[in-house]
Length: 121
Image (cartoon, rainbow, N blue to C red; front, side, top):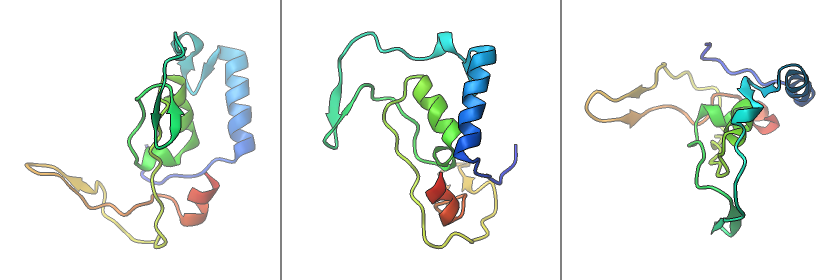
């Protein structure tokens, strides 16, 4: 896996999803029998919005990529904390950028994509 993220055009993502589902009954490798189907109508309110489950991915580079958001949703996540984007998007940060031998310090900058790429995603 590369440490460089590359956005995929929305049209290409839709084609990928629809063709894979038509041929394999999967979306991004997740078979339809693993798709989360909520068994009841229960929900809770958070930040003034209805939420069906408390599950969701934490913000991070993965929440800048549409396939990861889609697969999270398919497997039951309904609360998404999308990663924020900073104006300075050209910093060179050594990777891996988290050192957690005894204590954890997150030294990464806030985006893996450029600001226009993140906006597009």
